[in-house]
Structures are given as structure tokens and as C-alpha cells.
Image (cartoon, rainbow, N blue to C red; front, side, top):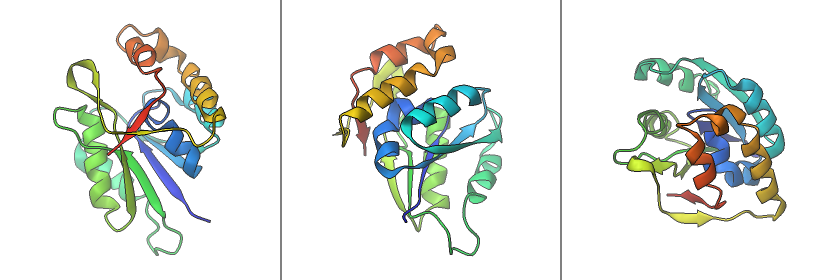
Length: 174
């Protein structure tokens, strides 16, 4: 059985940007920054059919602190390590925490297959890349249901546009 780890900088990134990849690989989702949305994350990952865990890393933590937690995701013996890692792409002028997690994934998991997913570019635009389509039609409904679990984000004036603007259901990988 292959084991896939999906790194999401924030609870909601796994759904907004990598829901089809999460479903395709039945990924274990690891959310890096703890922003108090674990109840929403739990509901969303249930819709995606994935397991998850929330790391206890506060926003604004330094790179070494984040890296130590990511290293802790590795099996020291290598016997039961991940077969692939899905991580955010590093983008010019991209979100600082997305880029940090993406950059650290390339270092910490350098010997493992890495699939990079796009998030968003500066100035409120979506990254462009090769579209990822759902393997099964019901994955679209599951992504929508998972998105609806993030009520705090949907109702937030600064985050609401991402949920409405990204309902085109496409995802991109680099």
C-alpha cells in the first residue's frame, strides 16, 4: 500500500487547491499552521475521504521551527516512510507561508516523489498550470461539500473571495 502525505500550510488549502489530488491518492493531510480550525478541517477531510493531523505550529514561527516538525514526519528507519508527498509550489511573490512549506518539503523530502500544487499568485490571481481534473465525477461534489465546511473562511471578509472565485473546480499542479 502506498502512503501519500499532503502538506497544507493552512486548514482549507488542502480543499481549495489540492482536493482532487488528496482524493486520488487517499492522502494523509498534515496541516502545518494551527489557526484554530480543526473542527472545520475534520469535517472537510471526512468529505475528501482522507485522514489528517494538525501540527501545533503558530503562524509566524521561524523556518527552523517549521522544518523540525516536518522532519518529524519522516520515519527515521525509512521502513515505513512516505511514498510521495504533495506540497505547495514555490511561487515568485507567492504567499510567504505557502512558499516556506513548499521550499522545506523539497529539502526534507528530497528523496521522495514530490507533486507540487499551485495555490494563488500575488494580487489576488490564481496560479496557472496544467489543470487537474477529478478522476471521478463525485469528487466535484465532495470538494464542494468540503469547501462548505470552512464556514469561518466563507464568512470572513478577507477570505470569502477565495471561496467564491475558486469555485471553477479546477486545480493546478506544476
